Length: 383
Picture: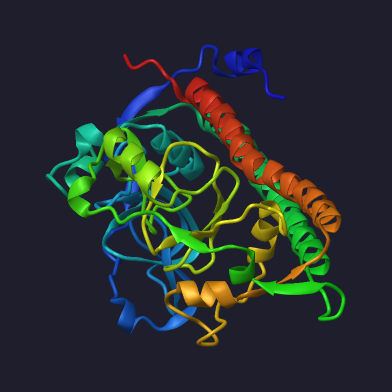
C-alpha cells in the first residue's frame, strides 16, 4: 500500500512551474471531423464524442497518445468529461484533442485535468462550451518529468486495481447468476404428471388498485404513487394521505407479501409488496389475491421469473390482460416442497444480491482512495 509519508518525500522540495496549456501542449483540433451516424462506415477504430466512444468506424483522424477534453456537451459540468485515447482513433468536433510537449507527460495531464474545476473556463448558457481560446489559458503545474512519471505510476496503479476488482466481481456475479438461473429452472420444472397443475385464476382473483387521475397526483407528497415507468424504482408522483386511506379501505389493495406484476411495458416484472404505504397504477400493475392455502407467495415470485406470459397471443405481447394472467398454468407441489424450493432459491438470491450490492460499494471505495491520493499528489501550491 502507498503511504502518505512516501508521497511527502516524493514531493519534498520539488520545484513546480505553472504554465498555460497553450505553452506546454499541442491542440490537434484541425483534423477533427464529425460524421453523421448514417454516413459512418463500420470498422474497428473508436469514434469519440464529448463523453465517450460513440461508434467504431473505418479510418482515423489521429494516431498517438492524446487527452480528449469536451468542447461542449459534457454530461457533467462539475465532473468534466476527460478521456484518454491511444493509437488510431476518430474524433468529432465536440472534443479538444490535446497532446503534451516534451516537458509534459500526457498521462500526468490526464490525471490533473480530471481533478480540475472547468466551470470558470466555460461560456454559453444551456450548452456550456470550452472554447479553444479559454482552453489554452488553463494553467497547470509542471513538476520535473521524473516526478510526473512517478505520480502517474501511483495513480495508474489505483486505476488498474479498480479495473481488476470490477472485472473480478463482475465475473463472480455472472457465475452466481448462472448458478441461480440453473437451479431455479431445475427446481421449478415439472412434468405434467409429477405435480398438480392449476391456473392462477383457480388460486386467486386478479386484482388492481383504483384508478388515480393525473390531477390527483403531485410531484411531492405523502404517499408514493408507482406507475409502470417507476415500478420497482424511485417514484416521481405522489397522492395525498387522505385519498390513499379512502381508496385503500374502499377498493382493492395488496396484502403484505403478495407479488405485484407489471402488465405492460416489460411484461412480468415483479415486486414483493413490503407493506409500506404506497399506491399502484391500475391495470398496469396487478396481483393475484392469494391466501397462501395452496401456493406460497414467494413460490409464485420465483415461478413468475420463468413464466411464459405470451399465453393467449403467443410470442411477444404488449399488454398482459387479466384473462391472460388468470389462464396461466403453474405447477403446484405440496406446500412443504414449495417451502424447500423457496429456501434454496432464497440462498442463491442472497448470494447474488451480496455481489450486486457489494460491487458498487467496492468500486466507490477504490474511487475514493484514488481521489484521495490524486488530490494529495496534484495539490501543488500556486504562487
